[in-house]
Amino acid sequence: MAAVFLLVGALGIVVLLLSLFAGEIGEFGHPDADGPFSVPAIAALLGGVGFGGAAASAVLPEALPDAVTVLLSVAVGLAVAVPLAWGAVRLSRALKDMPTQETLTRHHLIGAQGVVVSAVPSAGYGEVRLALAGQQLKYAARSDAPLPTGTPVYVVEALSDTAVQVVSTAPDPMPEILPEPGGNHP
Image (cartoon, rainbow, N blue to C red):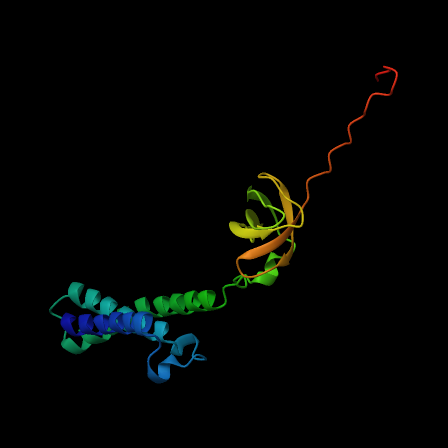
């Protein structure tokens, strides 16, 4: 009797593995199928009834009539299966409704700030490291004015998916105070 319940439990595992690796299955795999009729819920029900029933039939006394053993095993299996199915439904809904950030595109580069990591000549490309969506990313960079390594920059245009136009955000250096003619020094 336990072998039959173990086969039902194994069937639940097979259904779950097929849905994970091969996608949704047949009518049950409809994208709108949710709740107790979703593939994870059905797999959890089968597994719970099978393995819970097998455990119950293994510990029940052999003196019980077969019909009573089957009924008690099914009851224990259902008691195990219902919370498993409920958990599977909750987990699959949480995963389906999980918020994610949109995929970054070149338009997200405009306004990003970073630093020059390879000097940017006025007539060519250098390299900048930009902080974008919590990540440090490197891009080829062009600028109207030459920028030395370590210069903080701001992206004003995305030239391509891998290149940007930048301007320096470094403060302008203070003009030197030249001594006045005649030797008076401040």
